[in-house]
Length: 250
Ligand code: MF3
Ligand code: CO
Image (cartoon, rainbow, N blue to C red; front, side, top):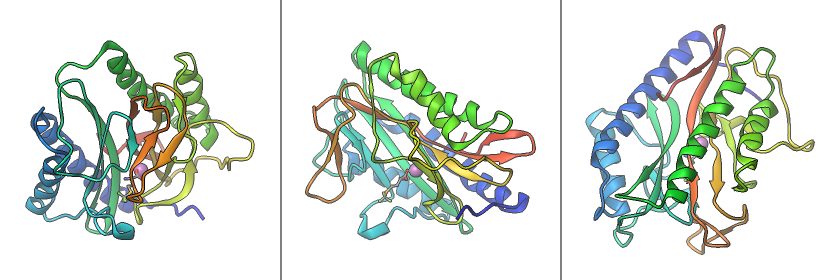
């Protein structure tokens, strides 16, 4: 069931999202070669403590951190680790949920460490562009969920990249994961509700340079590409309002 949010509730999620954006501004200045992914998570967690907010990923089905930090062929849900050291040429996505006064926002940024190959840089730029095309589609009149999927898929297809199929965007705000599901590819078997004022959801394309096929590691979380190709992930929380679509995490 899709839970619509009132203007007041959207205002609270907007506050949560604004702080999450500030957290990413801090990471923009902080993430560097030589840091471990554990260090990245600690920076995020310290930021949350300073601002008296929490990270609902921590403890979610036993997840041990406030962020997912996924390097190169790790697509999503990379567990922060002191053993994973960021090095020149790495592509690293940082996925964070933030809860403020009971309202949750969700966003992912992907960082290039030092100088990445032009192929990796292109993947990063195009994945972010796919997110913005999905957001734009959500803002058009009478849009449905699959218009977002279509915008993302039709843009990404030309590059021959793989689009992850097993994970998708989702409603957010009261809980970390709510209806509707926001897929990144079109299928007649996926639900396709009409977008309505008061919907708040995360759009999050997960794009692989090679095949879309993924595998789960034995740690129960880490998701990698099967072919070892580099993957990328960008995410924003958006709201549907009278004025179309509003990005709450930017
Ligand atoms: N933030 C992720 C999402 O985009 C969920 C992370 S799973 C967790 O949906 F275990 F880290 F919480
Ligand atoms: Co999400």
